Structures are given as C-alpha cells and as structure tokens.
Length: 223
Length: 78
Image (tube, rainbow over all chains, first blue to last red; front, side, top):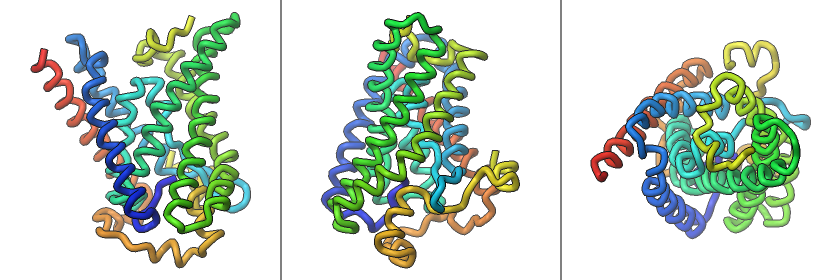
C-alpha cells in the first residue's frame, strides 16, 4: 500500500502532510503516559525491536491468488502493543526508512503515514477497543479476547485504509474513482487476511511469553 | 524470515495490492515512469537480504534515537 511519488495531486499530498505533521506533534504530547515513570527508558530498546519486526514484515510479501502479493502494515498491531500515539510515530519512522529504498515515495510519505499510521494505528486501535468491549461480555480468556479483537481490528483497518487510498488515487485523477476504490478494497479483502493472521498471532505469542509488553492493557479494559 | 521465505515459496515478488490496481488500469510502464523529486539513495541495493539487514538496522537506530530523545525531553519538562 506504499504510494509512490508522482501519483497523488499536490493538494492531496500537501493536505495529508499537514494532517500527519499535526498528528505527530499531538502524538508527542500524548506520549506522556508511556514515559511517565522512571522505568520508561527500559521500554525504548523494546520499541526498537518492535520496529525491526514491523520493518521485516513490511519488507516481505506473501502471495495472493491472481498474481498479487500482500505485506503486513502493522499499524493496529503496534497500536495494541504501544498505544495509538506511539504507533503513528513508529509507522512514520519506518516509512521514512522504507522511502530510502524507494518503497513508497518521499512526497507521498504524508499520505502513506496517514493511511498506515493514522488509519492503521489510531483508528485500528479504537476498533480493537470497541471489539474488546463486546468480547468482555463473554467468558473467553483475556488473551483470546485481545488476539481476536486485534485480528479483526487489523482486518477492518486495512480495508478502511485501502478504501481511503482508493479515494486518494481517485482524487489525483490517476484512475477513475469508482475503479480505484473498488479495486483497492477488492485486493485488500484477501491481503487483509494475512494482516489479521500475523497481527493476531504476534499478540497471542506476546501474551503467552511476556504479557507485560502489552503496554496498553489497562487502557484496553480487557477483563 | 527473508532467508527461508523465498526458497520455500511462501514469499512473493508479485506486485502488491496498490501496484496491481495501478498496473491493471494504466500499465506497468506508467507506474515506472512516475516522476519523483529525489532518487532513493539506498535503491541501488538489489539483494533482498542486504537491504533487509540495512533497513532493519536503520529502523532500530532511528526509532531508538527518536524515542530516547522524546523520553529525555519529557523527563526534563517534569
């Protein structure tokens, strides 16, 4: 889902840059909770490792029937682990590094960060939160509630990000809007399955080996 | 993951969803000829393994540095 340079029109490109810069500034101020105690420095290497995992997963594509491939975006996954505001910063920085390799454009960085960081991270996180509220009414185990919510939340967030990406391409006039939206959503119906499986499995694994790494647990309100 | 993924065939070099949509609509050459204001300075690395190692290392260093700086500034403000 990495938009290249030259695809979007200047107004969309600048608008999305303004939004992502504003959200990054807001994220900086909202990160207080993550760094409020003396122990907070200990989580920084862990954030770095998580970034490495996301970069590696975004770098490799799994096959989708029809001669297409998909890769993890990881916005919702990072948001569930670190919180929505930290996820925007992490995704933005990963996209900066990827643009060094030509995977996503430099002018399109604002749009890519908007689609994968804000929609994948922030919106995905609140979808997960809503799903956990629903699953709290069941007798399911805590780790299963978070795993299932993350998987479904990631899937919905990817489809929404694909929809928005289709709108952006349509607005740019590169492809007629009705084709860009329907085609983007169609392919991501399949790609999203991989996103949901990988995100769900990583969360389940973390819950099994080191549940305190899920920094948002108290905020998620899982019972 | 990269080292075992391609030989086992569980990884793919096919275009991703966005590229597929653009190629189906406008053709591969249209996508390749999009104008960019800069040349990605690491795009010359064609080996996936080396690119992954450099990319992962850069991600860790940059994110570590940024979050360390955020943490430092937050603590200084308190």
